[in-house]
Amino acid sequence: MQVNEIKKLFLETFGGEDENLRVFASPGRVNLIGEHVDYCGGPVFPAALTMKTTIVARKRDDDIIRLKATDLDIVVEAKIDELEKYKGQLKWGDYQLGVALELKNAGYKIVGCDLLYDDTTPHGGGLSSSAAIEISTALMFATFSNEENGITTPVDMIEMAKLGQAAEHSYIGVNCGIMDQFASAMGKKDHAIYLDCATLDYELVPLTLGDYCLILSNTNKKHSLGASKYNERRMECEAGLNAFKTVMPKIKQLADISPEEFEANKGVLTDPVVLKRIKHIVYECDRVKRSVDALKSGDLATFGQLMNASHDSLQYDYEVSCDELDILAHEARKLPYVIGSRMTGAGFGGCTVSVVKKENANDFINTLAPIYQEKSGLTASFYISEIGDGGMEIK
Ligand code: GLA
Image (cartoon, rainbow, N blue to C red; front, side):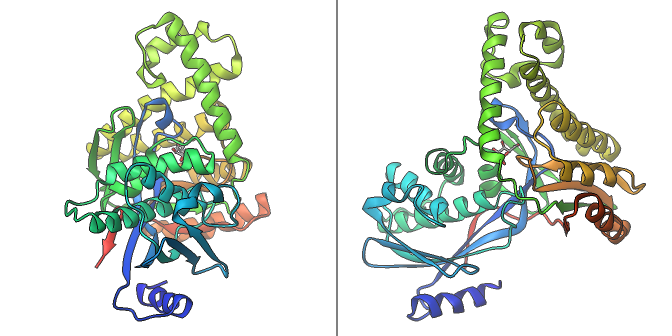
């Protein structure tokens, strides 16, 4: 929806005049490479999308938060001093209230407000619609808090990313890494973020793809199994790290292990499943570094090969892909104008990202759509992805 339409709907829902309305937005993300390594201290390479969450907000003069979404009929009402109470009880709205609670616990003054949310990032599509909600919400509450407290310095977006991640852990129960919230908070138009998840050092790398573009192909398979499997992978990584520490006591995280060190010491992993998981982490971290070098030197072919290798590793070793993602990634690769294709995000559904020659973008969609339909029984959606800015207030 356009901002004016959201504002109109806001006034229809909550009444009043439009002079005190504020607008905040924060995007979803695509991860180019570096999957399931953020929580192992690895490097990742995401970019913010132009698909986003937009909030139209208005302060209230009591301690009540009212929430609505443009595509839902319900209005959720919550009291600021009872935020813990709603956890796990709501049909919708836990990301927002979880973030409010994290900010409150971090010392922000949460102001009562009426909020209307509009999302253009597809839900369950692996493009971090949840981080988009978290970061737009965090920015909005922090901005209001600063105004109450007479603080004029800009909101610290990296802190917002950390608080958004904390809300996901404590309120939603997904033990996610920092990548999605960081990309949503810190993205920059036409740039990807080369982020070291151990230190949060980052570099904005211009995403110059020349004659090529990024196409996101959505399996439209919701990743419902995702949360439990995600937490299971984290535990497997923990087990692998503990085993490796017995032979490499100096390492702090799996990302500290080089491929050579892995090969020399992998005998310490006696569980074959854990062995596969750690192999993915070690080689994926290496692929990210090589991808960034390749892209910086304009070597798209190498980048494409690394994307394909990343998908295969997620499919066979980390086992977070699914038939639908595999069909899209492998069928895409058969097309002569595709440089690379892989699943993006947590997996078990969601999207692939493919590097496709611009002039063949329509062929790509027209070729893949019927093949996917026939092989999976589902209808895919396609988006030619544009890289946008991170969270901001829209004035
Ligand atoms: C989800 C999580 C991220 C990251 C990816 C996989 O999107 O939120 O932290 O772990 O999965 O790379």
